[in-house]
View 1 (cartoon, helix red, strand yellow):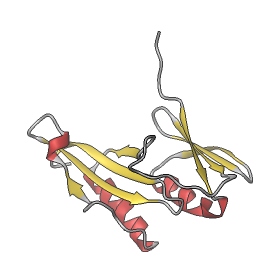
View 2: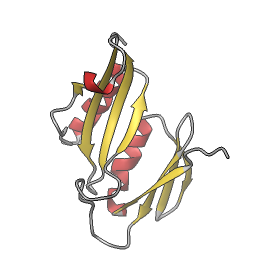
View 3: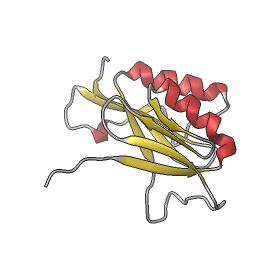
Length: 136
């Protein structure tokens, strides 16, 4: 059997949809479907993200069982910094002392794992990460 990641649905307060639209636009994702309660995005590789109007107001607890965060990988260190600057214009705070390099997450001495982590208006935890050569 072969399988691959297909999609992830994130339930949101649809009044916050502009936040997700802006984030996905700067990340280079393409809208594949949109109506008054759903917007779907496709990346340049595989897997889709769907933002769907939530019927309930309960939010996630990062330390509880279940999904902890959504990680989106970029091609350059400067891409991480660009997303950070974009988010900070809207007063989105970086979490967990990010941006920072995480050498403990790489297996080669000439590589780095450079990340930011932040929370969306719906308390969804996101990571934007570059993994690759230190100089890129």
